[in-house]
Amino acid sequence: MARTPTIPTPTPSAEDEVLIREIDEAVREDALYSFMRDHGMKVLGVILLGVAGLGGWLIYNHYAEQALEQQSEALVSALDYAQQRDFDTASKKVAPLLGADASPGARAAARFIQAGGLIEQNNTAGAANLYKMVADDAEAPAALRDLARIREVTLKYDQMQPADVIAQLGPLAKPGNPFFGSAGELVAMAHLEKGDRKAAGMIFADIAKQEDLPETLRSRARQMAGLMGVDAVVDVNQLLKDEGVTTSDDAQATGAPAAAEVR
Image 1: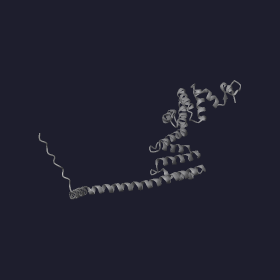
Image 2: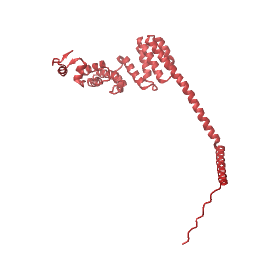
Image 3: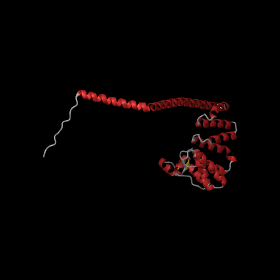
Image 4: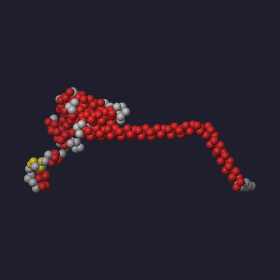
C-alpha cells in the first residue's frame, strides 16, 4: 500500500515575518480607526459624563460634609448653653436646624433641645408638641422617634385616655425593645387604670426580670407586680442578697447565725 507523501511546511524567512507583522499592525490600526470613526464621539461622551458626574459628586460631598460639621457645631454650642441653663440662647442656636435643608437627625436633636428648654420653663404643652413633631417625622432616626413618642406621652399622660396610651406605646412595651422599661411602665399603668390588673401585672413582672434595667425601676415594678398577684421574682436568694438580707446558706458559709437577718 502506497504511503501518503509528507509535504514539509515551509519556514518563513525573516523578511516574511517582518511583512506579516506590518500587515497585522496595519489591520489593527485600520480596525481602531474604523471603531473611533464610528463610535469615537459616543466613547468621548461617556468619558465626559463620567468625569462630570465624579466632579459633581465630589463637590456635593464636600459641601454636604461642611453642612454637617456646621450643624454639629450648632448642636454642641446649644448643649453648652443649655447646661448653663441659658435655654433662650440654646433655642436660638438650633433654630436654623429646624428647616428642611437640615439633616433629619440634626432637626430632631434641635427639637429635643428646644423641648428640654420649654420643660424647664414649665411649658409642657409646647414641649409635648415638639416631641410629637419628632415622633411624626418619618425621616428622623427611628430611635429618636420612639424616644420622642415616650416623652410626649409622659407629658400628656394625665390628659390621655388609657387606650390611647396603650395604642401609642404598646409596640415599645415589649421585652427586648430598648425603651421597654419606660414604655412598659406607662403601658402597665394604663392597663391598671382600665381595670386590667392581669395585663398590668404581667408587664410589671417582665420589667422586674430585665437585668439590664435600672434597679430602682425593677424594684418598683416588682412591688407593683406583687400587688397585682403576679410573681416577678426569678431568683429569691439573689433578690435577698440585693436587698441586704442574709440567708441561711450565707450564714453557714460565713459562720453567722443560721436565721436570716437584715444586715
